[in-house]
Image (tube, rainbow, N blue to C red; front, side):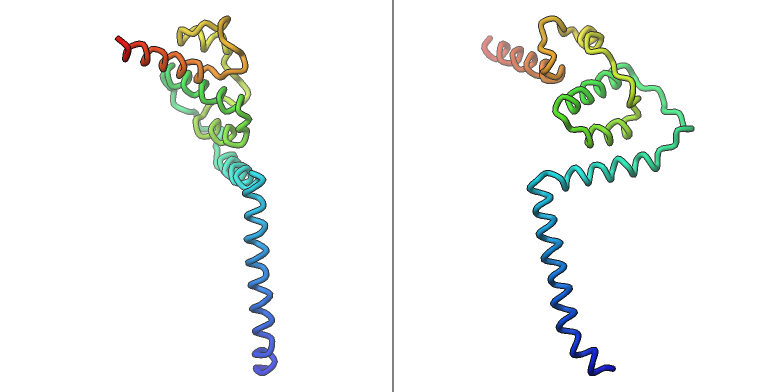
Length: 140
């Protein structure tokens, strides 16, 4: 039996090395396609779903925190970061089915929703505004 095993060891080693090469090739392919990061995000989201206890109530947050979370949610949604958004919604405790109206958020932040392009996330509009202010202050 030992003689038979020693004869098979090189064959087993080659087979295992072949699996490593195949695993590496599949991993690289998934990375190039962007699938690997999506799968990792889905796994994280599922872990949070599994660990989440709906009977525990989240502590109330200041209004600013809800607005910041809504800005981030809208940004991720408009940039199609759905898996990342799923994890974010779970971790932040934001209600996943209830979204704050864009006009309300704009009003709370002093952004004119009529002048803003619906395709541009509010957080990008705020950054543009702050950059203009900063540029204007540096010219003074």
